[in-house]
Image 1 (tube, rainbow, N blue to C red):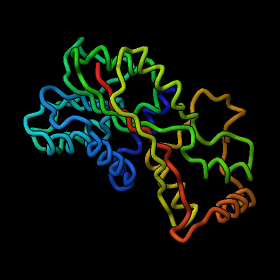
Image 2 (image 1 turned 45 degrees about the horizontal axis):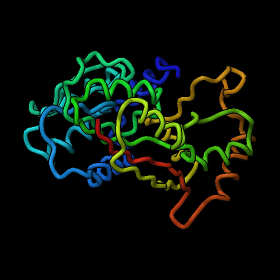
Image 3 (image 1 turned 90 degrees about the horizontal axis):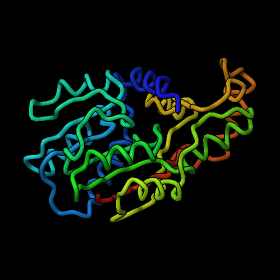
Length: 259
């Protein structure tokens, strides 16, 4: 995956991220509520921390945690420096090559970061830095994510407009190969609604989630969309409108595991 391009997208999104991250906050709350363990203690890694919502959730839910928040986009990490001193240690690094010693964490939390990486590499690194018996709570996106976006754009052109999200089978295999044992696995379809196409696309773009990778130049649109194409896109989206607005579905995996 073109990590440099994705890093730039999230770096640009950092100043506006909290204002448009409704889905990310909701998923974080659900991940916390679904924890199969009643207590957490010790050293915690928030992997792909963004602006620190997960670190804050964990610190408020469990007293005495020593949280290390890590993200590969420096502007995201820099926003954490406005957090209270108790929150958290900050690291700017790649989840696929953690600059952390083996077996140094009791728990790893990672919400909506895995889909931008190679799952096998990330699970391998998580397993490496967890202590024996260490725990993992993670969310990522499945292949039905942005189904409405792909359907609507199919009426406009043949370019790719989203990344290919990993399905459950390969994710389970990567987790197993890393030496992590599944404790609980849930899959939920979560829809957000926007009043119009412009606000729907802006929300995706401002989160940095419009990046695609491993795609040849001829497979992606290189310029602005023309007026006729924009009208076709709006018409295609209107066929999907509900009473709540235009839907955008996030196919969300909630994964809990132990080493």
